[in-house]
Length: 286
Image (cartoon, rainbow, N blue to C red; front, side, top):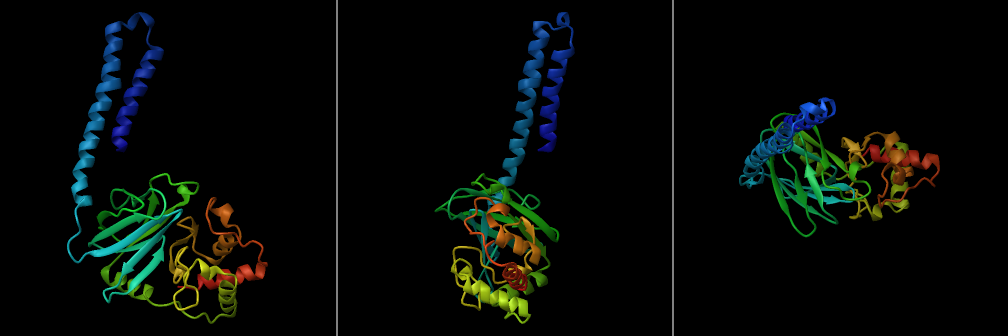
C-alpha cells in the first residue's frame, strides 16, 4: 500500500511540477490532455485496482473459520476500551481488558462485537482489520508467526477518545501461554504489603467495586474493566500509559484529562496518601 500511494503521489506531483514549470508554448492541448489522462486517471486506476485485487486475495484466509478446536477469544469494543474473554481448557471463563495473548503458530478465532457504537479491531503486525457492530458478532482468524508484543488499535472513529483506544497483543510459546492463562483464571492475591492493604480498603470503600471486578474480593462490578490481574498487563487506560504505580495514580486522579470523554470519574479529591495506596494496590494485582 505504501508503494501504491507513492506511485500515485509521484504521478500527481509530476503533473503539478510540469504544469508550473513548462513554457506556455510547450503545453499543447494534446500533451496536456495526455498528462491528465495518464497521470490523473490511468496510473491511479491501475495502481488502485492492483491493490484491491491484492487485498481481496487476503480475505478468504482472514475470514475463513478457524479449524475446530482453535483457541477462541471474545472481544467486545466499548467506549473506549476492550473487554476480552477467554475460556480455559477446564471450562473456566476468564475476563481481562485491553490485552490479548496468543500462542505462537496456532490459529486464533476472534469473536468480535460492540457494546455501543461501531469499532474496528486491528493488530497491524498480525493481519487485517474487521469492524465490530452492536448486536452482531463478526469473526477474524489470525495466526502469529513470531513471538513478541504488538500494538493493536481501534481503526474506526468511535467518539472522543477514539485515538486513545489501544491494546497489546502478546505472542508466546504455547507452554508460556498455558501458564499465563492458568494464572489469569486464578483470583487476585491477597495483598500483604501495608500500603497495598490500605489501598484495597480504599478501593472497596470508595465504590470502585461498583464498576470494576477483582475476583476473590467483594468487588464484582461489570461496567468497567476487570482488574483482577491488572498489574501484570502491558499498559493501563486502554493502551495509553505504561503500567506502573505513578501512572495508576495519574489515571485515578486525572482520568478525564488523561482520557477525555471517559465515563470513569476522576478521584483527584482524595488525599495524596490515599491515591498512593490505591496505586500500590492496583500495581500489586499481578
